[in-house]
Image (cartoon, rainbow, N blue to C red; front, side, top):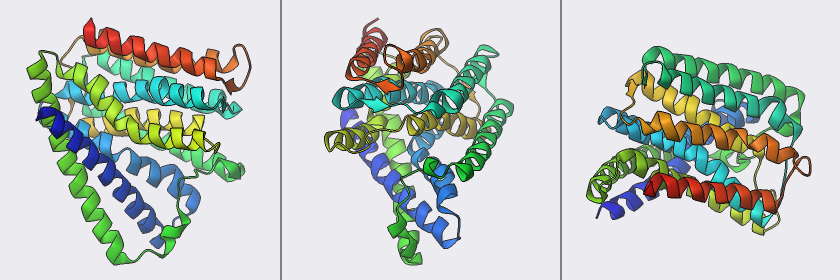
Length: 315
């Protein structure tokens, strides 16, 4: 039953996230917010809502390792699983903005998280506020850059939502909010129960099973696009997702409920894996062929993810 609860919880999170994105975009159009700002802020925050609800629910219930494991595992899965599988199907072009701007920002937030956990083994409200402030500065800079370079506008904004009625927006918001809340409850409770049944820590379940579950929608969309020979995956979107996971999810969660690290493995293992997967992107982007993430590179990083799963689960 625990696995059933987890699967139902993940399904509700996916459904709730989709309804929240659609309602948020439609509401933003009603408020005459520009398409560019919607793409860079509203969509990004809404797509991080499932992770935020899971992390917040876990922190409030006293399972902080699920909060940390969920984010670190998701960041690792975004690179090792999503990028690895997609690149093996269709090579991905790497834009220069990736290593000049997005990658350094992701590394800065990753090291900030490492420092906060090293300094007291928690993320308190002051540190959470620093993460949120850093995210706001990042978004402001992103918006200013996008005004100069129009093609950087995020493509996920659906213009057909402009004519959505207020009634639909409210219904979508209610469905999205209810699904996210129910999904986070089932996922956290099911994960804790499953971990106890299997004799492993909540951290192991969150950094593997939950992280993979929350990455499946992005993986599915990227694989379908790659098979259709469409634009499979944007490095900018991938890095942006990892930045939002740390800055908005952990930042906002710790503002509401400080996150206290419970397992030493979070600091001695998981965060090193997250930083390593993030760091390796630049060497892979340049060697041997510049600005192309080939099938071989995809296989290498996917193999690295398999090693991570094996060590985390069985060692």
